[in-house]
Image (cartoon, rainbow, N blue to C red; front, top):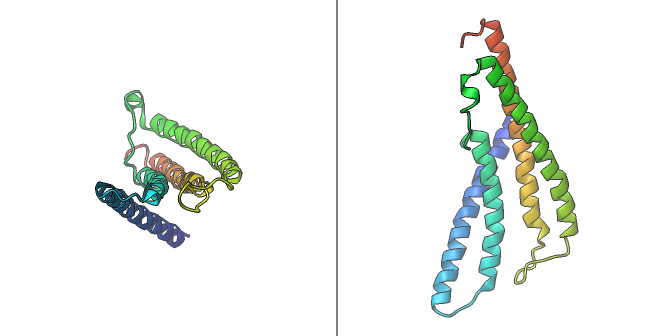
Amino acid sequence: MRRVYRALCQAEVFICGAGFIFLVGFVFLSAILRFFRISMSWNIDLAMFLLAWTAFLGADIAWRSGQLLGVDIVTRRFPRKVQQGIEIGIYVVIMGALALIVVFGISLAVTENLRTYQSIPIPYSLVTLSLVAAALSMIFSTILKIRRCIMNFNTQKATGGKK
């Protein structure tokens, strides 16, 4: 199971990196072509498509690696067990919000199935599915974070609270 998760994480990083490179390339190409008065509107539409996917997948990569901002000014002075309990509670709330994003994102993708971009025949629902895919991946990452907190909580109990 760990191998599958790691492979999915590596694929996510690769897709996000490649999408960002193509995004920058399309925007740069569009700017150069616009200088020569050549209009290629599909460049901008494809760049917007790639922006959605790279932004949401990048958010999951940052969430998984712990590179998002956190505010611990209130909980910093609490005992370690209380901090871990609050952390688990926050992860549960985040997981609930992500589950809502998945449910309503799928509903939105179904309703946007007929809507397409102006210059390319890609349904808008593929953009909406980027949020769903990232939220699903974030749910798995959050489950692993909760599991890690519980394991640390149990390890701390077994060693008498010294860690």
